[in-house]
Image (cartoon, helix red, strand yellow):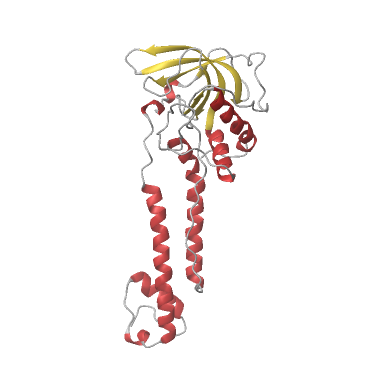
Length: 291
């Protein structure tokens, strides 16, 4: 007889038989109500295992490897050289973005949020199976919320458009998509960013034996934090593309806990585009916790 078989508890006994893998006994096989519950439980458990498998693969799948120029080094954090307010003429945080200008450049920008669809089932669902599926859905939702910003920071870098030269990200990465998903990704990136500024490269000093340049940037506009010193410095790998040069106008983003930027944009057209999504997403980013 199947473990737990009880004519008055077909659902529970059938579900237990499916979970343990025990074949139904003769009494159970002769019970039409039990076999109906058994077949339903088999389908439910198969779907549950499929969903748990998807979650497991999402947790164990390795992320894409970033370019060498995006390596983090918290010990060499970008440090303001002068504790002063921004230079007169620096734009306030909420200023409107200008019309895109000329010039080629490159940019790295955060991605739209990913959406996952699961197939729907039209048949009736047993109460216990529905509860188990609800638990899986809750776990899946927590997984999306908890790892969404990791996607932004680890492999969410996109190439510049066809008119914009080269990019620091893999050329196969896609540009952000319009809509609520993109807005969520932008606000999430800014919530976890430590420094987002715009300015002019004042100097590039190669550090012997390190494979890095020390970039000195004269800041003309702070996005995050909303104010700071007139000048900051930060390291960048010498092999990154585009490599910054003295005199470059650049928009830079540095993630929390890192020293090197994971976003830098050159070229007036590209800077105007990124300035627009940054100013739009900044208010919402202040309400986002960074995992």
